Image 1 (cartoon, rainbow, N blue to C red):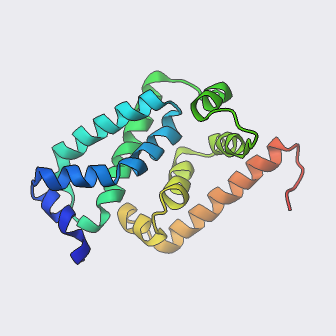
Image 2: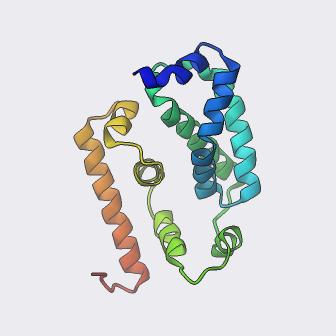
Length: 174
């Protein structure tokens, strides 16, 4: 755990170490915010708010190795709060405007299929595949057995596949 020296310093109150960590995780936080909020301005505001919240409660981090996971969790909670507060639906036009019109609409299909999953399933898939958090780390952070997390991820992927099949009119992909 010698690679966690910056995290340890930040947890102890070192502002410089905290800022350095925030800069190193800025892209992951932005990707998380954009995937939830679908809007660049909202994503940038989310990063500011999460930085403030993380700074305010950095001493609560118990395990320096999970600092990034802790930050991502704060971002996910903040984004879910924003969405609930605004009670808005994500429209395909917003996604196109945010990400630009491209000839590859795979991103839109994935976003549409993800909307059919529960918040928990979306969260699991986001952590595992968009943020590349290991199953073991997800299990430890959520205090859930690894096998249970693997099963839930598998079920979420199955639901995601079913969402694709429904959208394609029942046609199965090979």
